[in-house]
Structures are given as structure tokens and as C-alpha cells.
Length: 317
Image 1: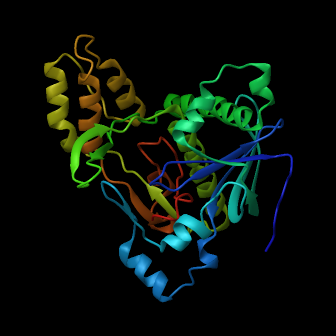
Image 2: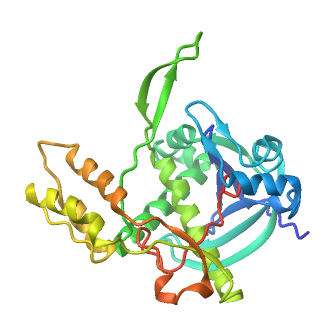
């Protein structure tokens, strides 16, 4: 197995307690990476563990726990990044300019030694710190802030290309400490740190999709998101028009722009409700083999990406 180790790169894990982590690193040359775990080293095809994972198909998230697709020994220990512990992974490494232009891409089997394991809130605290000389000298803070700057550019570029910003609110439950019965429900607060991780995961999935397509033009497992059926949107279009707004769904950029314009200053929840309803009108995304469809049908409508796959999150799908 090929191992790559660069001591001048800062390696951080950013995750949430119930979800799989993603990981990125940066140095003065703006080299970043997103990794996925090498589960195939432990899960051999046709074994009992492989068949059970295939039967489960995905990890299931309940109000207070996660039912893993794979045993927790793998998902939370051997195949999970931990602070100051070596872990094998398969990584996508980009050389990126300060304005998020990709100069070079490599795909490597790697050995990762994380200098920190951060929650989203801890990462957000670092993002919010002022840009002082002391903070610039701190490895963790400078790495997280640098990644956040790149993520903002990547996000703007996706949105300008027509990627949708929809709403699918997540909630969390509050439990009684003694009976463990739920006593309240609250909306899960999304932070910029969540967006940071998402941007690099999306970039990894697009990058890997293009790479496997070059290698296996007719056999690549990709993910497509067809344009929505207008009939599914008719009711929502009619209701939006009754409030003075035109929803245009001819392409994702037009839908994104019309959703952005549908704002009622006196009703701050209107736009969010409209986005939630629009999410439910979209066609479901599909896994497919590249040989099954023509290239123009590979497009991912919601992400405005011509090619997309799921390289990330092998722990749960």
C-alpha cells in the first residue's frame, strides 16, 4: 500500500457527534484534501458483513442515536479519524490558488495523522476569531480560516452556475435527563463550518466523478438529478403567483434566481417555506451507470454539475 505523508501539512478533522467526518488540510501553498476511509480493506465482497451492509443500504439516524450500516468498531474507531492517531484513507488532493482555482489534482492512498478533532461549533469558533498575528501563527486556526475562505469562493461559484439553495430543516430533540423521554424539539443550527465541510465534499465528489469517467467511460457509477417534471411544480407555481412571484423552473439557475427574488420583508418565513416546498417538488436523484444514459443526461440539476458521484461518506451509504 502506498503511503503519503507530508509533515508540513496541517491535518484537521471536522465533524458532528452523530455524523461521519470529513477532513481537509492546508499549507502555505494552498494544498487541500478530502478523504474517504478505506473500508474495502476490512469489508470483503460477499462476506457476511458486506451482505448485511448491503441489506441495510444506509445508516439510519434516530432522534438520539445512529443505527450504523457497518459495525461501530469500523465506523467510529478503525475507519474514523481521531486526534493524534494514524488512520489509513484514500484522499483527493488539490493544489488550489487563493481564488480557488484548481492547479493540480492527485488521488492517493494516504496515512493521516490529525492534529485535532473538531466539532462544527469548535471549527466555527476558529472561523469567527479575528485575523490577528497570533491567530495566523496558530496551526489549527489558520488552517480552518484558510479553508473557510476557499469554501466561500467555491460556494459563490456553484451558486453563480445555478446550484440551488433549498431548505430542508433538521431538528434535534431535547430529552428529560431521568426518563429520557423527549421534552422539546429545536431546529438544528447550521453554521458556516457545516458549509465549509460540504463545499469540499461536493468538490471531491465532482472531481472523483470526472476521474472515474475518464478511466471507465461506460462503467462509472455516477449520480444524476433529472430536471423536475413541470406538473410537480404547477401547484407551487400557482401559489407563488398568487403572492406576486413567478417561479421559473426551465433550468436550475432560473429557479434559483426566482427563489431569491421571492421575498416578503414583512414575512421572513415566506421564502424559507417556498424553498422547502420547492425541495419536495424536485425529482429524486438517481445512481446510474454512465453507459446507461447519454452525457447530457448525467447532469445534476440541484448542484448544477455535469458530472457527480458519491465518493464521500462510505460509512453510511
